[in-house]
Length: 141
Ligand SMILES: Nc1ncnc2c1ncn2[C@@H]1O[C@H](COP(=O)(O)OP(=O)(O)O)[C@@H](O)[C@H]1O
Ligand SMILES: [Mg+2]
Image (tube, rainbow, N blue to C red; front, side, top):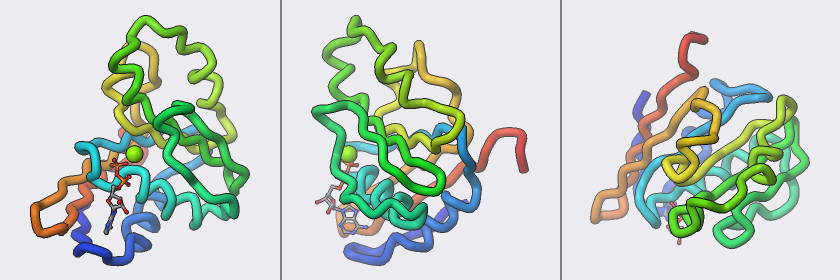
């Protein structure tokens, strides 16, 4: 499924499409370059899932978890790209059966992350138009 959003446009339809596809225990991979809008999409999804706290980029902490229905785990593995030997057990602990995990830069966790149940690839054109290519959970639909 592909959804196009103009610059400054509402991400709710994208978040609704993603949230309709996933359930607790799932791991959603968010792909796209810096500035594509990965964190912003997680904010929109978290809002739909009832997270009331502000969702901030986990670029430095690497992972955050928020109360929601279900809980939302948000990981950003970008900094692991420079520290590939870092112990990742603490990050794996965020991937629980009761939460939906959203992972930015999953390629930096390719040797320990569970497979994506759903992935969203974000393409950003120079005019600010974003294309969200949503791949549904493997084998479930
Ligand atoms: N749908 C959108 N419309 C306009 N600006 C957006 C949109 N999504 C993201 N942005 C802006 O682009 C910048 C990068 O977004 P961010 O979500 O942090 O990207 P990423 O996590 O992929 O690096 C931020 O300034 C954000 O406000
Ligand atoms: Mg980000």
